[in-house]
Length: 549
Image (tube, rainbow, N blue to C red; front, side, top):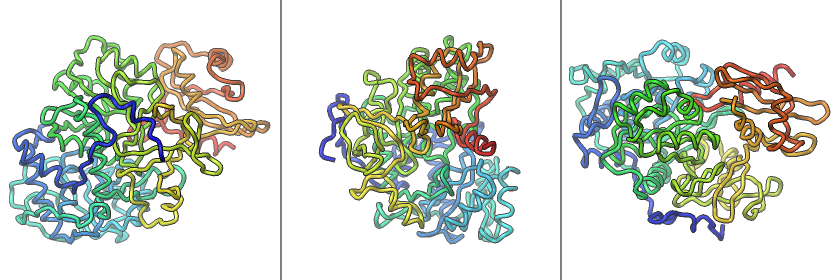
């Protein structure tokens, strides 16, 4: 693209053209060990590892993995919850020269099987938990894996004990921790070609595809976060305390919590799930400075009866990702916590972040911010893909050093994903203002066609969130014999709040929605379906509607 209207919107001291550090990911941990050896790197319960201990564990486990055959070209699966072993294993696989394949503990058995077969994973590292081992058992029995490495909660308590490493179909993670050979980091010859992580997409429109994320892609993303937060003076190296509740197997937490966090010498407090009371208690007691969440978590925060009486003054930076956050929730949290809350936009294929709100004074309700350093964004026509001017709605496209190399073993899908001039087609519908702020209207796959009109569920959801009784809402399309589709809202109402009828809700929405996009059906639910990271999920509700049709 020839013009970059967002350049003038960068705050003082920040620059879109800031140099990005491209490096092997193992160098991030190596640098942190040299700079902050005695600083706590990761903490969970009674387990705390400083940077020197963490790096030493990585060297031993990498040495053990090399004994098990891990080398460049070998794919190693991580099927782990948020535990310290995930961090050790992640860096150890890369240090041995392998590629990490992330697996979600919430995946169904058939999804796991597809990913194992598609990625050609041969060694899997998992945790001694019945729900994980049971889903892994048939995959092991069918011979799809050569080795299953099993971690236990007490691994680090016995890490110094001599546990001989015996290659075989099942290996204890503790044996890797006690490996005698210390592996020096494998240094990729070409950072752009060396695939560090195979990260599977959600598969909402078919079988999940593996996005190939190189060392260059991921280190560029870390550098973009650094310039956005440290370069701007929001955060400081060697001082921050992250509360990491989002799953590390997800790209959002992997890049920002783990890779960026460790690169600045932060302390990561790992939680395996979001617990509202435990999270707020840790904010206060451990003086948390950084928290990454999804909109539903911020809805829970602002709805807590004691939120206004808690001392949250230690919080410097919070981020909401995965889905747009309602303006009312954003403003309530910022008012209560007096903390910078950043929204951004990105996807697995962009190593999480493509745009971000640039600062307190630049917040614009509904906008996901401006392109981060080194990223170009343009809007193309949905029909013939020609470039559109500022203000016109179309498909948002991204180009930058953080954009994936392509989809694993899917040249057809890779070709479809990019424009002829090298931009990634995101599938998001949006527009850009004359000063470079990006607004997302909806997903192309979520857009409804009602009586010939394009209708965007997100617009309807934003309007419904204005109703004082609404806590959460999902809008999807339902069959309509006359109009083709009509919008239906599934709503979780606030406890004790009055529940309006459909007609009362339509009357409330009349000032915010046009006739062509007006709600035609409504259903109250005690809970709404969510994804692994707590993001509201349309997929289950769409499946319900399809089953009834």
